[in-house]
Length: 117
Image 1 (cartoon, rainbow, N blue to C red):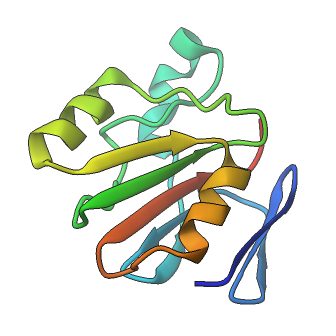
Image 2: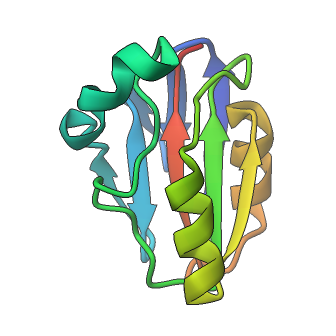
């Protein structure tokens, strides 16, 4: 998959520019719906990634791009669910996540990419 980290708040996937968080599942891109996680914002000072979101668990590896500065909080319940499902969870700054996706097998790898902070 052709994924480029442009900079804070912007990536390109297969030539399409995105300025909002995205989920890549089975090689398809969709917007990340953060609504279920907003209830936890006060606790973290930022909307975290929670298990209430539609996380693309049908994979062997889940890459989470944690933002330009790596500031996306990932709730412990997400890490626990990944372990329970036997999914390798890689949480790295979004620039690194984009680089990992360039060589990833999209049959076994999904991703959540946070584009700011």
